[in-house]
Length: 359
Ligand code: HEC
Ligand code: HEC
Ligand code: HEC
Ligand code: HEC
Ligand code: HEC
Image (cartoon, rainbow, N blue to C red; front, side, top):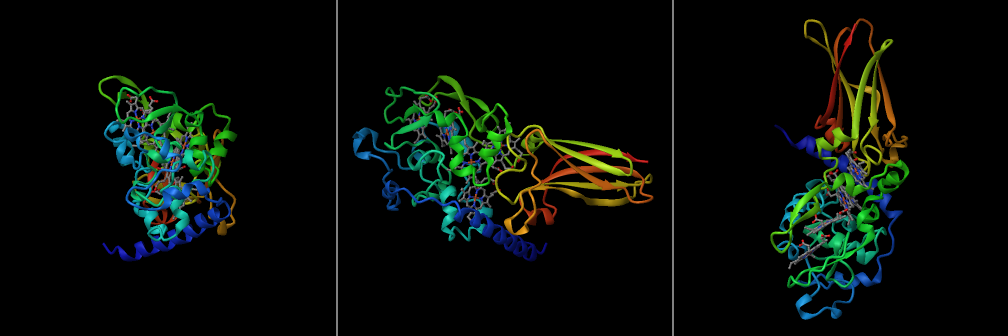
C-alpha cells in the first residue's frame, strides 16, 4: 500500500494538534523549582534532588528506575510496556513533539520525581534517562533519594540496598496523578463526578505480589494503567442504547463506568456513532454513515466548538433521521479513535454494536 500521503496527513494533523497541546501548556507552565537543577546536569551519574549527602554509602540515592527492577520484577514487567513506560519512546508522541525538540513536551513525558517537584504541582523535566519516560522514580522517589512514597510504612532494613517505603497519603488518591493529568481537567472531573472511587481504584487492578525479597505474598496494584488503548476499559466506561422513535434512530451513550468525562485528557480522542443499514435481501443501503451530533470529544481550541464529552452518569443523545423508503436491518456502532487522523482513516476501535429493525 502507498503509505506516504496518509502518513503526511497524519503528521500534519498531529502538528496542528500539537500547537494546541502546546498552547494549553504555555498558559499553565510554572517556574521550575531551583532545587531541581542538581538533577539537570545530565552527566552519567545524575544527582537526585534533595540531600544525597545524608545517605550512607550503602544507601546511595537511586539514580535510575533500573535499580528498582531486581527487587520489583513483577511491577517492572507491568510498567515497562505500559504507556507510562513508553512515554518517551511512543512514536506518536515522538512525531508530535518533533522528536522532543519541543521542550515543553518533555515535562510530563520524562519528568523529575513528583515528590521532589511538589505533589499535584506541574512536573519539571529531567535531563537523564529520558527514554524511561514516566518511570518508578517519577512517581515514587522522595527528596532524600532513598525513600519511596507508598501507601504504608514498611520496614525493609533486613534487605540490603532496599528502598525505604514511607506512607504518603497522596499516593492513595488523585493528587498523585494531578501534576500530569490535570492539563485537561481529568482530576477536576473526578472531583466533580461525586463518584466514591479514586484513579487507582479503576486504573490499578489489585494483584498478588511475591515479596521483593522472596516468597512472601502480599497485595499489590497492577502498574499496567489501562486507559484509552484498552477495549475492556471502553466497554466498562460506556453503555449504548438504541431505539427507533418515530422517524429516527435514537442512540444514547451513557457514561456508566469512568469517574471523569469520556473521553478525557488529550484533546485528540473521540467516541463516534455510525449507522449501517442493509435491506431485506442483505444489500447495503447505508454504509457506516456518521450520526449527526454523533461525536463525543473535547475539540481543539481553534475549532471553537463546545465540548461533547460525556460526564459521569450523563447521557449523550444522537438522532439519525431515517430517509424516506429506507427499510431493513440497522447496525449502530460506537467507536473510539485516538486522534482525528486515525478516525478519518477508519482506524477505530469498535466498542459496541447494536441491531435494530427499520420497518
Ligand atoms: C534491594 C531491594 C530493593 C530495591 C533496590 C528497591 N526496593 Fe522497594 N521494596 C523492597 C522491599 C524488601 C520492600 C518491602 C515489601 C516487599 O517485600 O515487597 C519494598 C517495598 C517497596 C514499596 C512499598 C510496597 C508496599 O507494600 O506498600 C514501594 C512503593 C517500593 N518498594 C518502591 C521501590 C522503588 C520505586 C524502587 C527503586 C527506586 C525500589 N523500591 C527499590 C526492596 C527493594
Ligand atoms: C502536563 C503534562 C503533559 C505535557 C506538558 C505534555 N503531555 Fe502528552 N500526555 C500527557 C498525559 C497525561 C497523556 C495521557 C493521557 C491521554 O493520552 O489522554 C499524554 C498523552 C500524549 C499523547 C497520546 C499518546 C498515545 O499513544 O495515545 C501524545 C501524542 C502526546 N501526549 C504528545 C505530547 C506533545 C507533543 C506534547 C508537547 C507539545 C505533550 N504531549 C506535552 C501529559 C502531558
Ligand atoms: C504513574 C505513577 C507510577 C509509576 C510510574 C510507578 N508507580 Fe508504583 N505505585 C503508584 C501508586 C499510585 C501506587 C499505590 C497504589 C495504591 O495502592 O493505591 C503504587 C504502588 C507501588 C507498590 C506497592 C504495591 C505493589 O503493587 O506492590 C510498589 C512496590 C511499587 N509501586 C513499585 C513501583 C516500581 C518498582 C515502579 C517502576 C517499575 C513503579 N512503582 C512505577 C504509582 C506509580
Ligand atoms: C509524572 C507524570 C505522570 C504521573 C504522575 C501520572 N501519569 Fe499517567 N500518564 C502520563 C503520561 C505522559 C502518559 C502518556 C504516555 C504516552 O502514551 O506517551 C500517561 C498515561 C496514562 C494512562 C494511559 C492513557 C491511555 O489512554 O492509554 C493512564 C490510564 C494513566 N496515565 C493514569 C494515571 C494515574 C491513575 C496516575 C496516578 C496514580 C498517573 N497516571 C500518574 C504521565 C503521568
Ligand atoms: C470509576 C472508574 C474510573 C475512575 C475513578 C477514573 N477512571 Fe480513568 N478511565 C476509566 C475508564 C473506564 C476509562 C476508559 C474510557 C475512556 O477512555 O475514556 C478511563 C480512561 C482514562 C484515560 C484515557 C483517556 C481517555 O479518556 O481516552 C486516562 C488518561 C484516565 N482515565 C486517567 C484517569 C485519572 C488520572 C483518574 C483520576 C483523576 C481517573 N482516570 C479516574 C475509569 C476510571
